[in-house]
Length: 232
Image 1 (cartoon, rainbow, N blue to C red):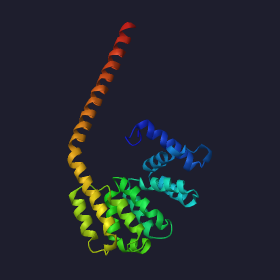
Image 2 (image 1 turned 30 degrees about the vertical axis):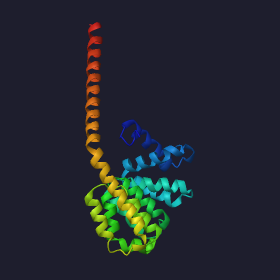
Image 3 (image 1 turned 90 degrees about the horizontal axis):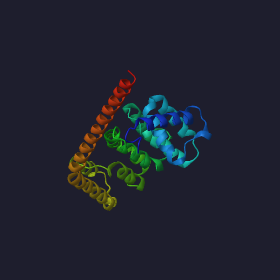
Image 4 (image 1 turned 90 degrees about the vertical axis):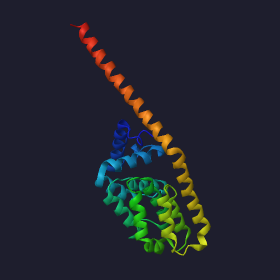
């Protein structure tokens, strides 16, 4: 949670552990399973192209499915458009990713705000390639759609999704598509009901945080002045 909130100490510690695990290959120093995902994702976010490439190599060499999933999530956490595009192209080119991991990979990408729009656009443009790999109307194809779209939360999103899927001959999956549309509609309602109160709460929390920081700075200055006065 601290890393997700961009807490500096957490980010620094995650980078240090990432460097141990990936760069030095000190497998005995690997983080605990519950921390491994955070460490890898933060390492890729902060490490740029070189860190992403090392993570991709580690994925190709990994044997454990759990480790592979952590490495996929790490690659998907990059904020660099060129690396996001490369990961998407690897989905439909070559043999880096088995078809059964593609829904999870797309889900990880759409959790990343920097990758969400690019991922959906890439899928639409390259839909025929995804159909070729995943199967026309297959569970993998529908799961991929759900993985990308079930967090969409605007009317524009819903209209675009319905328009895109209208001519894709997915009638025999209509029940599952309707569930997806209903989920987006629920997300729209949730935003309508909660977005303003949540924003107001965050603004209030931020203001309280700033007040506390100002008090701490004032206290430190006062303490420093008092200390220097007693020694003069």
